[in-house]
Length: 89
Image (cartoon, rainbow, N blue to C red; front, top):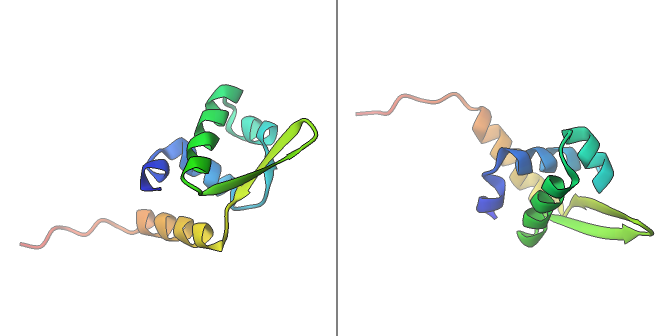
């Protein structure tokens, strides 16, 4: 799970998905990336159970798996935003 979260591009996808379900083409447009790159990132996130997917006709939609993932994402972002404290001797 943390392996999946360590990549900034995958983290950006999770942030987008935290705003609601999106189809793959919407994610491609939002990230201005190639379909193959987005699909590979989503595969890692899905494998880590951070996102869920559903198919509707020709489209595949992704969303955050559950509230636990949303809480984890918010905690990761809050921790990353904290100022770095000098090491104590």
